[in-house]
Length: 565
Image (cartoon, rainbow, N blue to C red; front, side, top):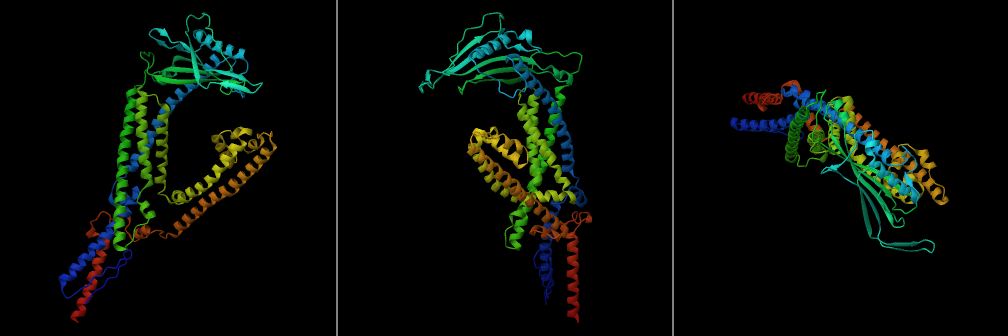
């Protein structure tokens, strides 16, 4: 005689056969219980892994340390970013205002916001502007409104360098269309000291036929005193000014440009009275606290990722054993929590940015831009991680599910559309570049076309096309009309439709509540609620096993009654 118990366990059939030997039936019964217990334990482990922090607290009483840590981390990282941003803003403002000051001091007749490029067109103007720069450099103490000073080495002011670059030899006769040029470039430099002020200017001569460029280079120093009002120690700045007279095109126009390279250093000696400077050690201690919290967050999230991978491997073995098939990639990726990966990347960027910030505050480094990139990107990822916790609410979760489901199709769609976009970029650059300012470089072409896709700057793009060549002008009309029609009316509409279809599909799935994957169907068979207590019990005391034992006893009792009769 035998008793067969049919129980659907994700497609498994458990047979418990009873013979006249009670010990044999007990062994089969015990083995069946062990198999079922393993499956149920795996099901609860996976279901527990996908619970939100509140459900995990009700299931096993585990406090949501990662959630608390992320909330605290968001607050202190945002405070760190704001403090660094305010300090960086003072640095950027000081640099920009000094650059504008130098242009007004050393560029003759300079006008702010001029549409036309600052350029020279006569030989006399070139000599006049060079002499003007040298004279202003010598009169710096009498004309500047700030604390600008010459660079000093070994108690001597460093000189101004006047260098000209020119072809070694060259004879050009445009009248009979002949020329002879030596492409080797030679450089000649003159040194001009700021003292004495009224000393005659050195004699120099420019051969404009061979001239490539003239560069005037000198260094000025200044101290940023505005930080005192914000209770920060002032920094000392070295401004390396490079004024370039560019004649590379030999078109009769020499463009003049002033560049400013800035080095920030810690002042050697300082004394501040009348105000209490903010201790740099408190700021450094605050940054160290952020680093420690990011390390803890990194460790916790890494542990969770490893736990997910271990569960994935265990579930894969279960599928191979009971169904003889491999787990699909979509189900495998369910175990890899992308939000934890995002937080790990954010913690890494924040740690690097905080270390750079400490180095900047201690004047070891002055890489404000690099530090800003790390801190800004890290803070952006931290705030994006908040969406993970909003996803626990159904009304917000649909947005996250739509983005995740549509992402593969969006990437494929963008790759196809990008090929068409690049084809228009190359065509517009080579054909319209000589006749339209927005198509002069590949970068500006891409920016112009991207603006057209978003409906910006359309009329000026059409209007500013030069009509010197009627064939090119007609081609530009066909080019622009086809691009706008193709991308706005077709590609952009298809892109929106792609997202909308995915949203409707996710919404229908949520309303129906039907599991859409093997993993979801596997977990849907676990009916234990987080507060049921099943997750706190050992495997032998689970609710499922108690029910199974009751069913086995019931069948065994019936069999004994039958045999006695």
